[in-house]
Image: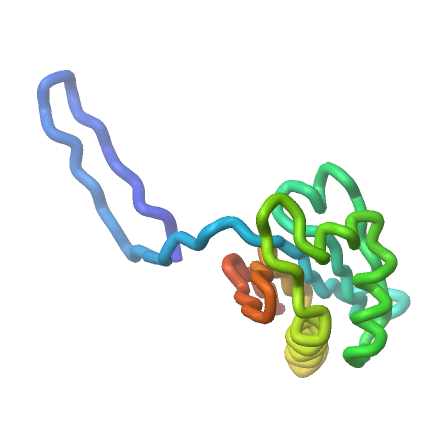
Length: 145
């Protein structure tokens, strides 16, 4: 979908817009945010990256990596490896993350990515919103060839 764009005319005249699509999503209250990504390394194949989401993935570079396939136990270990793992226990008024539920969701995302086979270039969820046992992908990008 292409973003909406507008042409602004001379001062005092109305702006017009050509809109090809609109995405409307409800706002969510603050919660813990995770990053989940799968990229395909030319030598090793699909690699799962898991870390704190939002801007933290870019600022802290606190990411655990594993080759696919993964199971829930592996994902739980990945969550525990993060320097920011304590955030998952509840911070600044957020509910503690249900780590079993998070591991289940991330395992399913990794399985879906692997299911795309050689067409997959990258899959990225940032953020994966975690509020206790409620786990929701708020922004997803999938690139295939």
